[in-house]
Length: 134
Image (tube, rainbow, N blue to C red; front, side, top):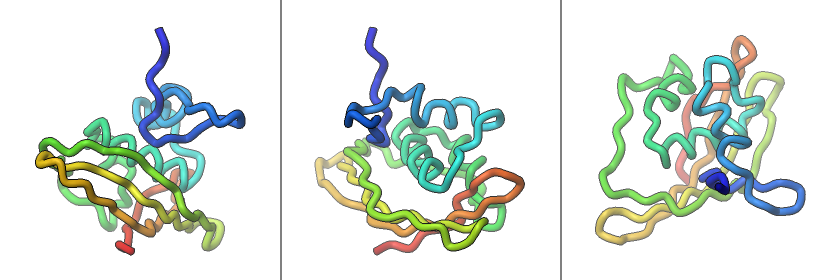
């Protein structure tokens, strides 16, 4: 049985989509033991967590200074894809990732979220801090 593609859309060197287990699954399903190695991987895995409605992962990877008390999901939203537009290291402990996430709501209306997200590394782990809409 073929493994499901990772929702984040990352592919291997031959441009084949990576399976969930080899991509974001290792972070989302075992975030205590396997933290995302860089800000882009964390951003991609957080997108995957939104697709899979994994509030536990989203909260665990949100920096404590900005973490909400809970995460809710909009009923009927279907995530359509992710495009990473830019990534940059600000310094050794801070990074930014700009992305476009496409979705369709329960009424069928499509929309795009364009954001430049900020990340910080503390204790060897990356955390999402916040993002500015573009």
